[in-house]
Amino acid sequence: MEIVISLYILIWLKLCEEKLKKSLHILQLEGYNSDKYIYWMQNNKERVHTRDDKIYVTLLLILSLSLILISPLPRTPVYPLIYAGISLFFAVKNSRLAEEAKKPLVFTKRAKRLFGIALFLVLFDLMLTLIVIRWLSKDILAYFAVWAGILTVIYYFSSFYMYGANIISKPIEERINKKYYVAASEKIKNMKIISVAITGSYGKTSTKFITETILKEKYKVLKTPESYNTPMGISKVINNDLTGDYDVFIAELGATKIGDIDEVAKLTNPKIGIITSIGPCHLETFKSIDNIMRTKYELIENLPDDGTAIFNYDNPHARKLADKTFKNKLVYGIDSFEDTDVFATDIHVDSLGLAFTLCIRSLGAIECRTRLLGRHNILNILGGAAIASVLGLTLEEIKRGISKLEPVEHRLQLIDPGTGVLVIDDAFNSNPDGAKAALDVLNSFKDRRKIIVTPGMVELGDLEETENFRFGELIASVCDVAILIGKKRTMPIYRGMKKHNFNEDNLYVVNSLNEATELIKNITKINDVILFENDLPDTYDEK
Image (cartoon, rainbow, N blue to C red; front, side):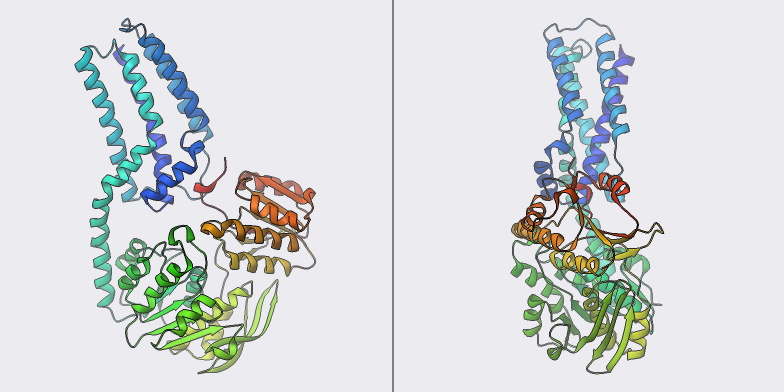
């Protein structure tokens, strides 16, 4: 009897462990933000409590209630063996149905601490249940059905244990983060290095990669990798990788709320700061464009008196910030070149890249060519060129850097797999301007059938439905075939496409990227070009 009960408890713990891991994965994707985690749980109840969860819990609760009526139970291993068998069945089924995540759970030190606390809370409730039953009945084996029913309820709500673990660990994590933050801040302040900070609603990562490539023509440069743009991510790079061998440090500064840029700007101590754009990104948390503008401007406010502020003058919100800035500044753009310090003329865009004349008022003009796709990338290049001009590079050095630019992974990256079907990978993120730019690139392939695969845009707050409707209108004007991912999420896109009488025979709606990939295998032909526009994180998947 004792052996069978122990076996049941072990299998139950395994079920709880797997549920805790899934919860930890979502919490990690939400930046360990408790409010976002709870918001996700409220809006994804079918993923918090899956169909199998409900069947498992219902079966065992009905069984427990039935057995309670005949309690105390005879001392036989039959009943716990039934519980163990049912639990084992669902544990095996869950492991077989587990899907590979786009961005898998990473067991960082913080994640391990959270998982340990959450598992401790589950074990604490297990022990508390057994102690109380023992105190009340003096025989936990005879009242197995009672406490097994309680354990079933604990399993069902185990996602909330991860929320509790995050609350408990918050002061611990704050102390740890503060330690690394202070160490990084002191380190960079005491180094003879030029720090460049880049922020914006979009375009900042591409501008960072472009700036690094150009500056390498003269300097030894270290940049924050990929999308490392939080205090902890940047602190890690400074503490572990930044040495006196480097001349320039380039940091991308991200934000989801007011005050975020101020925190990372004080950390990086920039001499040059650039705002690439301001738009409706993370509007769910910022609530208004004015709040986004105020937050991005925190970078400029943290520049020293002899620092340089750089603005994308084509962006109306960034222009407003530039106009109110009295520090040394440079502005760049394409549409209003007569008012800018750095601009481009004679622009030629094709499926092979960009050709244009780079004009820097303090240096002159020079013809440039790059493999990057999209007119919007010229703005990113102009931002990098503006930074380079401040740091003393010549026109020839800037041109050489531009010629060496490679597409950033998942950002309008042209891929030729050799099958006769071209792929444009713009899956990293999507926003209204970026989506339009991606469709402009797709439209440049005049002699090919154009296919788009997209789940639409997110985190646009109250503008999300309107912007996705407009996105649908643009798709209808450019694409021959459309594959929408997520029926509920892409409904505004569908309505925008239908407004322009898009052929429904060429419109497909699927539930996941995996389904879209399988569909593509069946419908593509030689000479097609496919645009993957945005790939939502696992938190947005429709099951």
